[in-house]
Image (spheres, rainbow, N blue to C red):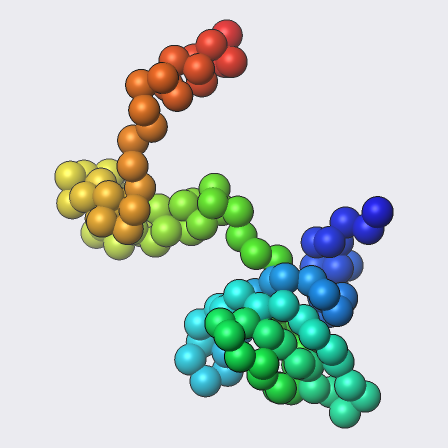
Length: 117
C-alpha cells in the first residue's frame, strides 16, 4: 500500500483522491481539500468546503494535512515568539489557552508518567 503522504517528501503533486491542504493565492490561507483531477493544461480540480475549485497548481501549493501535534507546535511557536523577551509568561500561556490548548486530564498525566518509566 502506498504511503499517502510520500508524494510530499518526493516533491510531487498529491495523487488524485488524496486529502491534503492547498494554499490560496488570494488569501494566503491553507484549505483542506481532496484532489479530484488534474489536466494537461496545468489545472487541478479540488473538492473542499462543499465546493469544487479549478485552479492553476504548483507543487509548493500543496502539503499533507497536519496532525494535531503539528498544529499545536505551530500555534505555540507563534505565541511564544510574540513575547518581546522570549520568556514564557502568563500572557503567552493565556494565549495558548485562548487558541484551544488544554491541560491533559490527571489520568492522562499518570499514564504518560508510567510510559516514560
